Length: 424
DNA sequence: TCTGGGGTCCTAGGACCC
DNA sequence: TCTGGGGTCCTAGGACCC
Image (tube, rainbow, N blue to C red; front, side, top):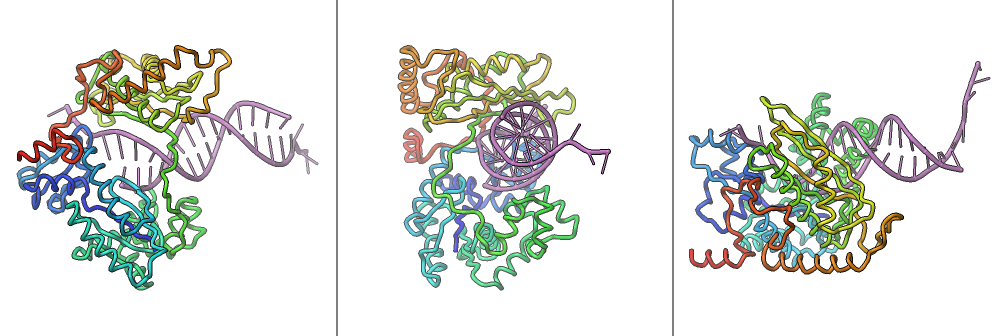
């Protein structure tokens, strides 16, 4: 058996731990740039706020009740999750951290009759220690555990646990699960399936395997087999090496001039390069994109991207910024209202395996010195705050920086904020 | 006026190799 | 009548996840 531990309305729950006044009232956490709802309280769901509802549309709904909003505070959520997974690990040690609010545990080493009781205890322990409510779904595969988790949230709110241990329970759960709610079946495939008259997970699992393969390729077949109880998606105890690292953000207002866009891009490149160095990698390719709003109606749309190949793979911020800005100048066209710029570092390789270029000298004394300097800069920035030491091209105004109008404190990680909580 | 960001995997087709 | 076969790499596009 596998367990899926999944927090309820995680971002909202994390905010409520430190701001009790938000409890019992409809509210939501907004996406970056305070764009739209990405986590909603149950009360907000009840008054019809949907996932992805734009902020401005919710303001129009304000007359329905006292809605609260928070900007997303990933520093806080990440740290709350670190606490939760630590508690989980004490009970179920074979753990995969799947996302910021979910983890899977392999229960193979547990006696069958103990599992449900252990899960119920674990769930109340997490609530007691962190204040965050979670639900636990237990099933034979990851896909079944996902469904069990949804049933736990819907029908077993008091214990928060659903143990899918009999065929009757499996059949019932599949019958109760709409096709679009199956993990691995997205909106596109759901539409295809519904058009052909298949509405529930049970309808899907009763289809012939060949039919599923033809309609949805091998990924779809994997989901189908998982629903039959065959484990196809293995546990991943260590996160696999990333294939690319990217950063891209919307500006707080539309930008038309090149200068602020260059500044923003330099910031994103610098922050992405830190992530690259933290995992002891260099990159050999870089992808820069620039776009107008996809929702633009009145103004003309424009999306451009450029794929840059680096002669020698590097993680040096200065070199990466220089390349990225040269790329940006090639794709930038005046006369548009730009909404977003971004960068993705690709072709990641360990920094011990850099292939020298035929045309450039291997790392010389100057380059080694620069690598040393970057180490010091990274240390300074991690101690004294991000971008404390920065490249001139990154500027100081940050006039383009994203909106975070309703940002809460970093209650658990930032000393100044902790002191404020005590005072409160 | 205002609508997120960061990822992965698979497939088909084209270009190339011997 | 009939013009090979086996392979790699890259890219674009489509689908999915949180």
